[in-house]
Image 1: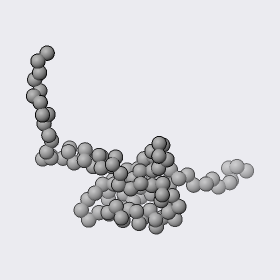
Image 2 (image 1 turned 45 degrees about the vertical axis):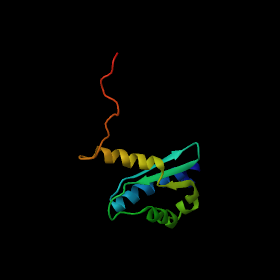
Image 3 (image 1 turned 90 degrees about the horizontal axis):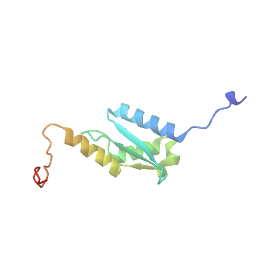
Image 4 (image 1 turned 180 degrees about the vertical axis):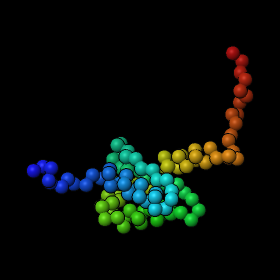
Length: 108
């Protein structure tokens, strides 16, 4: 009988699937992870010209029938996401990379 009963929707599965679908729909990469210390999901995404803004992502979360009930547990545009975007930008050709302030040679 248990096999025939419908299980409740897992919040993690819904959030991960929504991120994948949102990214595919807009042609961007979306990251999401759970932070156990705060009990919140953090979500961030690739910023491209003409792509969705932070307000667009929040509006899409509110428009989703299941995620709207968990919107308080989903943080959008976090510091960790900013670090990911910054590190990716530094890998691009022609990006400026600071050199160490002190010389590389030292006296042993």
